[in-house]
Image (cartoon, rainbow, N blue to C red; front, side, top):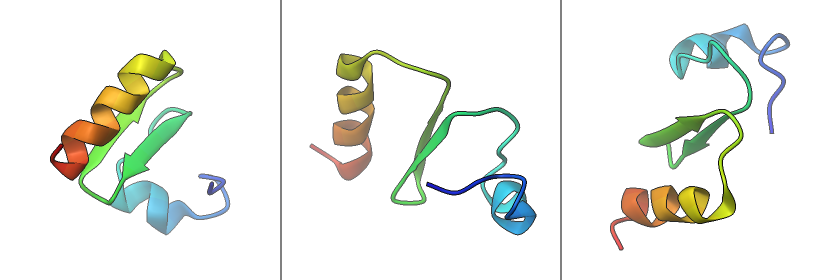
Length: 49
């Protein structure tokens, strides 16, 4: 976990405009609080399973 306001270079790099924002392996992302099943689906999608 990274505090966006303390690391502005990372916020810019990953286009963080709202929190929470989850970055998965620097290729996938999702914003906001999402249900667990959607969270897992996105992780599996991103890692190719």
